[in-house]
Image (cartoon, rainbow, N blue to C red):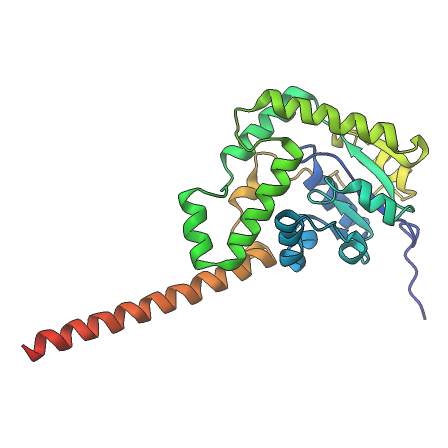
Length: 257
């Protein structure tokens, strides 16, 4: 017997185009609780690393049909940067524009960027040497966030505000009102579930990544992190093996004298 999902329409698809730090991680968890197949930033990027490198390094147009064909919901980067291409390819998608009080949002962005490893830093360079995946992820992440926010400098608050306003105004100008939900996570389940045609769960609405916890998440918590950890361990074994070989050669030379 076929199972029937009673919580939401089977054909429902939705994209959250809100900029990062507007409750996107909370919305991701909420949509997963409602049994949507959500493509958060990891699902959008990890399986398509070389593809996104091609977009930013060689000017290739994003093939969003390839990336998002299995998604019920899209949240966070790169979807909130390339949302127009996604809506062109998937016109059935409804749109959530997550918003937040601007001063609070700017403060959160500053905190996030202060805690983030960026390309060109000493840590980034070492990670890139030891883990190819870490190097690609850092480059893609920085490219996406720079394109969206205008700067990765935590002090670029004027630029952040300008990009935030331009982004939100453009979304409201191109998405038909009947397909758009302007939403603050403080509103909880009701407006979200009404928009999606779902029954509101009898549990508190989730609140995730309040203090940029994601930047301090253990590697084992994500597929990306586990891959990076494996590569770091493999590199450590190689380096240890080389050191042992060098030490053995030095000892052999010393003994011969």
